[in-house]
Length: 478
Image (cartoon, one colour):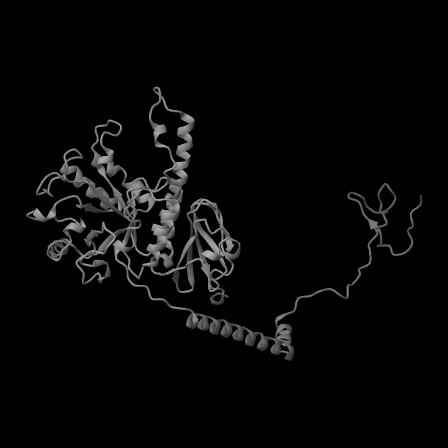
């Protein structure tokens, strides 16, 4: 095919290497090359230079936009500042009364004699108490009351020597050292001793019985306690009220700075020779709740109760104003059958033991939940107490045990505690407490099965159940 050679001689010409015009091929070889024509895009984006930017930014439109944007920012900032000031001014500002360490700690009563010959080991009872300090601190216990450390059949008692069956004096000194490291204080219970015939008193924090409560004895104990007290290691005198009537000194109604007694221990239940029924227990609790008048004693339960009501009383002790005192073993539910741990025909039932271990861990979790609630909720530490009576005529079943309730208030936060000691479910009357906020959240319960938000109109108390609910006033939150 002949090549077209006319036209521009430079177009499509290509001279190969080693070839010349006079080469053997008879001239240069020309090839057609397709080169597209350059197309110019009129809409090509080009960045603005500095001069163009300054010219556009200085226009009247941008200046107006920037000024309005700055004005909007300052208006929004001033609005938020004014809202915060209004919230701070209008919000209640409760002033917390400073509490002493014995008003904030959880007390734990323990008898070292319970650890005698346990496991037939070479360790003494006092050494086994030292081994339980980490466990007690894990539960939230801050004070341990040692009962029966001295022999009560010796008159006058020698408070410089402990019962040799429990251990030696160096072992007791080691217990004191270990308790300081664990952050657990120790109080000695001397209620079973005849202190009136003693020639001198020891230099420890003591607990006295009602029989020894009179001004002269307490004055001597107060002088001794103050002699060995320091600013960071304050010792106290504690009185245990064994009867239903108040002590002659009436120490619970005196101020801490001017009284001879720092703390008064009271029993929640009245003296009784038989186990109280649910109705009798509810009546005793209602009578106790109605008579509270701003006092902050230490509460304990010295009477045996049915195992299904054990957790209900635990909630009551941990939520009342005052210092809670629990006994050894109360942190574990009484529904755990301890007898299954004893050998039967040489070996216990492993499946039953495993079930009781699960129940024990669950009960310990319930106690830890109550302990954390007691220390974290300011309404339980500093709040006021209000008893909330129920209208018995409004109950669906008049023969059933009526529920009980009280309120702990601190500022705009309220903690509502509900009890149902009966064996039948109880529903709250919608018009029971119209002044209370209707919405809240569950804090804890005896079954540990109530979580999340709740409305007071839809609560149904299960048999032998206690519930702790935190209520908020909606007008105080945005």
